Length: 136
Image (cartoon, rainbow, N blue to C red; front, top):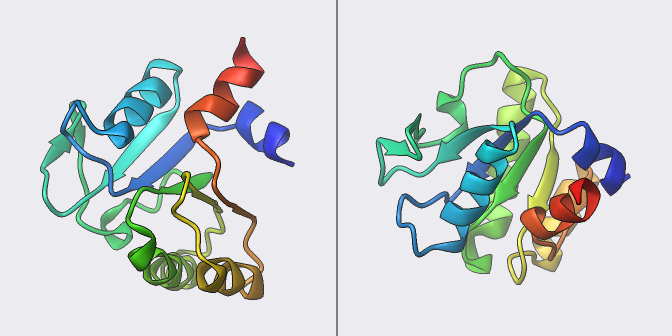
């Protein structure tokens, strides 16, 4: 499942994406962009990340194109709320992206919320590391 997803990945919303080049989310967003994947940074603290418009919430992302994956880069204290936001956004847009949580971001509550709403949920994996395994 993960390999198929990553092979066909075209669009990623990155919740908690930072414009600070010393943050991991910045490096992963840059990697995705350099590998031809369209990124949608989501962080109310920035207007742009890597020259791409930054959205303050998922609701600000245009409905076209379809988002393949939502990568959560927030402290685990917020992960369940982020999953709730993704579920609510999905109900409004009809989109059902895979939910990806970076290392040490997932919680049992977040996983349960996602699975109960029938979302694919990948936990405690680095998106860049897993993608590199496929392309190298």
